[in-house]
Length: 73
Image (cartoon, rainbow, N blue to C red; front, side, top):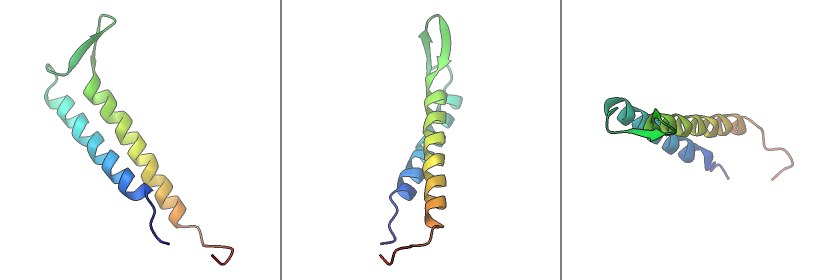
């Protein structure tokens, strides 16, 4: 079967990561939290995490699609 679930997962997480990073960059004052006395823009950091995860899913889907079906199944 030609369905690889990593494609839609990778696209979804990549898009959400880009949107969340953009939101954190535009609304800097509203998205700052105080963690241990330092200002951390949590939207930018979690957007980056989602972007990296989505990129890894897309990379895995692209590399997995190149393998030939061996074994006759």
